[in-house]
Image (cartoon, rainbow, N blue to C red; front, side, top):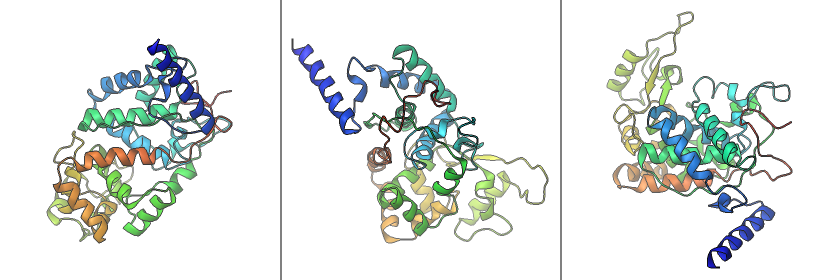
Length: 325
């Protein structure tokens, strides 16, 4: 009897959440929804990321790139189509560098087999980013769910909405504030640069023709060895390097040590040293054990609340690559 009462209350809460258009931890736990949803996604993510840690970095980055454009609505997953002829996926910030789409596809296929039409692609991205953070860095946090998938995706919006690597601190704070995210969120989420890879073209402006004085000179010379000057070369190959050379496959606070030492790749990374508030956060994350990991989960939850659609505006896609017809 007690078990039935618990299930009844769980489903009653679920209905109230639907009516309020709110996110909730354990949103799919009601038996009429998909109680195994989070464990299914976790299993898929772990199987891929343990084989290729770079996919985990891609999934974390995918959540950021999704939420900063039209909110967390899986618009970043849509392929080009008649209704969306030039999607976010094909924009300069995402193509060819954004990774992990095959992981989302595999998770969606497993969920559709277990619970057809129940779990949104937007929630799959949120779960996958959380699970990748755990596999790569033992970072654990609860992520609320109950998002709907968007129907619109535009390449131009990604280009205008995502902060580029050359932004200074004032510009970064501005774009985060536009999304109701704080300076703490900015510095914390920048810590995702502890994992994953970068194309050389994202930072070679700091290496050529002269070395940027905001970068450690020895580190810059080291990077020149990895990323030759291709400015005068036709059809040059855009090389790839780790964002963190010290612990490249571990999601940890090493990024903040790199920033302090001026051995981070991007100008936007160095910019975190240019105000007392952000400098203090960098120092704290570098020196206080566990502080970054705890803060990262909180900031991911904050970002996951951006611009939520309701059931009249969004849908639960059958395929994460296409809107329903």
